[in-house]
Length: 177
Image 1 (cartoon, one colour):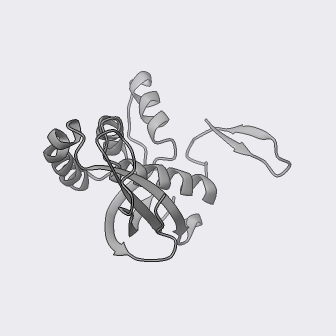
Image 2 (cartoon, one colour; image 1 turned 45 degrees about the vertical axis):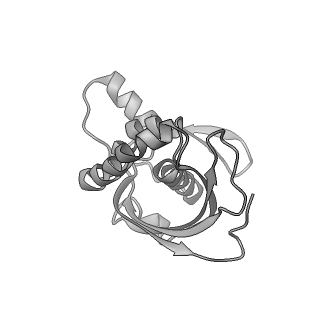
């Protein structure tokens, strides 16, 4: 079940089933949460991401990400290499096709380095353009209701990322915060 705000501003519950078509704000929110999990590096975010990201990623992409994160874990445990992610904007090509044919999202992010105490390091902001090829409504066939409910809580729209790339970006919207 997803709670959606209708045209008159009231919250209404919408059942997730084969006929459900996510709206653009729902897709954007889901992708922004995914990108934040994928690039954030700290002792709280990484364990949660290790559990959640296999639900979003094709296995080869997850395996590469997991290998990078596992190599960084000793440093992260010591407060080295900590990174915070800020979403600057998100644009989705053909959101209506996200469920049927798949589509592409362009998400501009800024990352900020953090000290071992969690404080932001001044002038450490870096900008990136993240391009995600994805499809919506890809749900696993899980018979166990408890496991299925755990899966749906972490990825309610059934986002499946087939490809993700990140390139450096420099712009006025990448400011230090």
